[in-house]
Length: 204
Image (cartoon, rainbow, N blue to C red):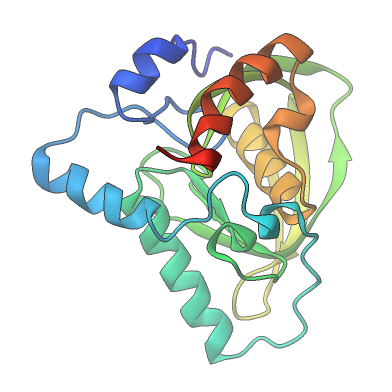
């Protein structure tokens, strides 16, 4: 399944908006939507932030605070033109992520997610990330997974996912374990990505 093969140079010209791979997708944005996206991205932790390397503990309280967190994450994900977002990316160490199962589907929240089945076959495709803007790297993922967890109200979930959706949830699960797509790509792709990301850590 070809999710994204946008060259990195083109991705930079688009301001870091990627295709449907990992967490981001390509869309031509008007001025207002672009401004909304910039505001959302400013609230999402970026590469170099130590919270992105922390493992999130499981959620034990299904309360109003969790519901508000999920609502905020869904809003940020959509404003940022994303297809997935983990709590660690907004600086919250709780085991929850939100994602779109299909491009136009309503966003889902999965709390305390765990993969209970994985396909033997895998696919390599390019991924982007809302926390690593402007880069794409090839990542090998299981082609299909069965995900279990709970929704934000504590109700049990069981999702059978393949292709695009399976890739998204594996990307988000990695975030909850402090793992970035840079850790799962080739050495060459990692070097190229770091060449883009490291100057931002230093600043102008």
